[in-house]
Length: 195
Image: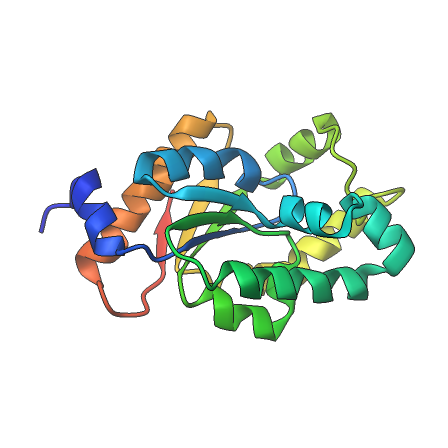
């Protein structure tokens, strides 16, 4: 079987949401808009929605309310987003930690953006975004966080390994992976990895 064209892929997806998961700094918020444009979808960043809803940035929410309260808000926002269709959704890195979130995520297609550790560290060091889980934390903490989350990220429908590619190439890898998923398993739960 040949891979579907982009127009055929859009038709086969039928408006199913695409949920981008992965560690902070993995490129979800940067790659998402490119995917949305290619698929004629809309792009939503859950962290941005939370910030607009609460009126505080993510770091302030963590500081004032704590991580547990943030994760509860994140789950509510994800539930609300899940009621819509034709979205590419950039999720927070920890969204996979709550079992209840998987019920929403699996209504769409879950895509794990998985950069090399060295590349991720470089991105995080050069990123001006204030990431509350990394404030004053060591590389060891990040490694432990990655180890805890990796088994959950691996439940994604599509695993896209990232090295140092430009965002356009990452977007193309995702689209190619989606095409393989719909070509070989339109209504089955099959995990696909792209290298």
